[in-house]
Image: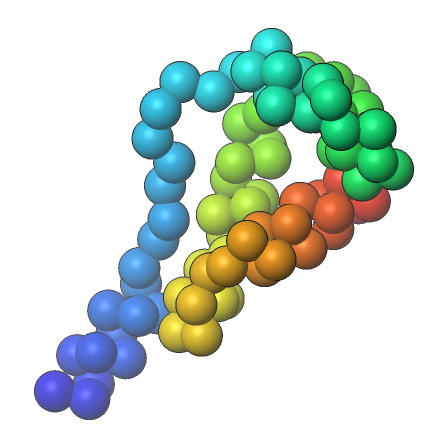
Length: 84
């Protein structure tokens, strides 16, 4: 059983459902004047879409599945993406 659980955890992946676009991201960040929000929006615009963001975020959050994915974890990963 331990090996199966380990295997499943190591091979689990995250995906995001719903319709999200650059325009929707802009809408979410419109009222946020923080440095982090501006950096993330700038990165999304530079990348000409959010596909890279979603793939990178899901890949990074996979490391946190065992300990839990929280709002602060997602925020931290978004900041790291924006700064990359």
